[in-house]
Amino acid sequence: MTPELIPFLATCIFIVAMMYASVGHGGASGYLAIMALFSLHPEALKPTALMLNIVVAGVGTYLYCTAKQFSWRVFWPFVITSIPMSFLGGTFNLPPDFYRPILGLFLFYAAWRLFFRHRDDEYESKPPSLPLAMLVGGVLGFISGLIGVGGGIFLSPLMILLRWARVREVSGIAAMFILVNSMSGLFGHLSSLQHVPTYAPALAGMALAGGTIGALCGSRHLPVATILKAMSFMMVLAGGKMFLI
Image (cartoon, rainbow, N blue to C red; front, side, top):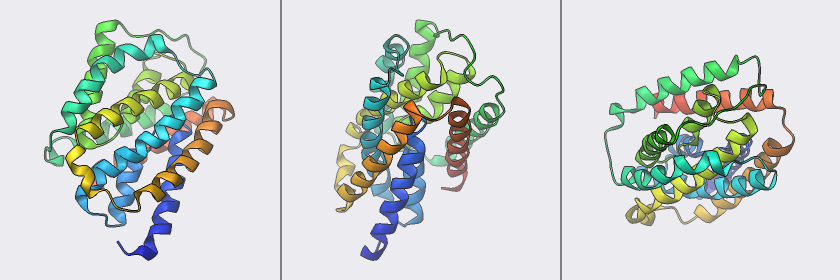
């Protein structure tokens, strides 16, 4: 990629980070799509996306926790299996044709269900059983490491549709889930860090700025109905990327 295009790429990263952080997501699926459009080297895509994910999910975790939009009791069963499975998934390089269409269809379905919700956040939440949460965490952790995302894009709609937590609380849980899985997945890609572009710190700075604005809005100001519509939009984008890239 030519140096003249770097500011445009950084601006796109800022916008994606702001949009995804508003619903507790790190934005890796968006970063992957944008970097592919800007013709970054294929080997640089996954580690760079994970690095940006860590930055945005990190600031999102802090802001959602300080806004008291997080439940450790709901979170921990998912993460104890997701961390090792994310590391394991990061060591695999399976042909995308095996799994991307299925993941894309799931995201489209979840986006449709969330977009047409009528009760928004007006429901009694009930956390899943310990075995179920550990199973879900392990599966999503492996998927996140495999495709280079944090897993929150899959966890968030599942938790809302099954009423495992309230909407804003789901965003806080997703942010920390993405953070720990992105870090674990990156450890599974340590050898690929040599392919991260030299201008990655500039991209990380823009992601931090956008993520901060988005997480502040999502954790404190945006109406729940708006968060659900935004989450649906993110999942449509992520689902489309599964088919196109």
